[in-house]
Length: 287
Ligand SMILES: [Zn+2]
Image (cartoon, rainbow, N blue to C red; front, top):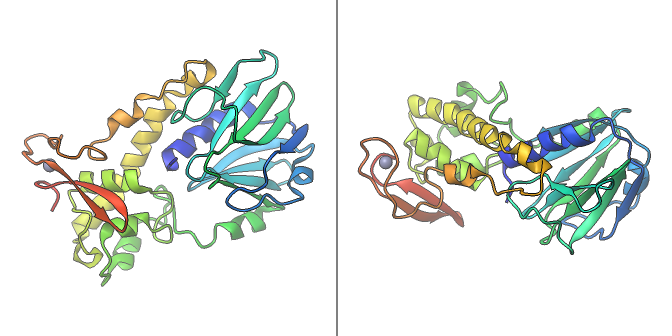
């Protein structure tokens, strides 16, 4: 499942490739994604020039010159492929999480630019497309979300205020998009590991120093993931779209029964299911 850093890498990759390009043709092969693609989707995009590709949380936002645009959520398995019409069989997969080979099935949406085709593939169909006519409509779509980890409003006072007297565990808070936007299961595990806080601790039990660590590592862990992924962007241009070394960078996620990687820590990584999600933590240094 793509998380914020992966979506950011896709954004950077698309920004390089399709900015300032004009949409010539839109072909929707299957409207039945998580939410049905609007019947006016094709006409909404027709002949529009892509001014900028933005991102909020895990949403890619395609802004047109006239301030209208559309947004994509990649869901569980959505990937975007760019097919170079000049070189025929050469294409670029914008996501380093998936196979570099253009799938033969589940290509639900195609957007054609001059000499370039954008293909949206999604086997599980949990992804979706949204359209908007202006900035106010766009803002409204994300009004129920909490701040992103990088946002100024995600500050120590906000965190303390939000977690005060709360019985719910801290892991669930990090996954709650109303508290903070864009942190998924992998990075919630990593942030808590770096902060030395056990995932099932009640939010109200966190000290101010621990809240400060949550703030610091929410930013650092995501930034590091983006820079690691970003360094593999060059690979998108050639066919050998290797998985990227990114997944090897996890310190705690999916490291059950392995030694803790922190210097001088003798702990072992344990796994526990919390709110139906796998939580990994060190049984020694995470308190
Ligand atoms: Zn440890």
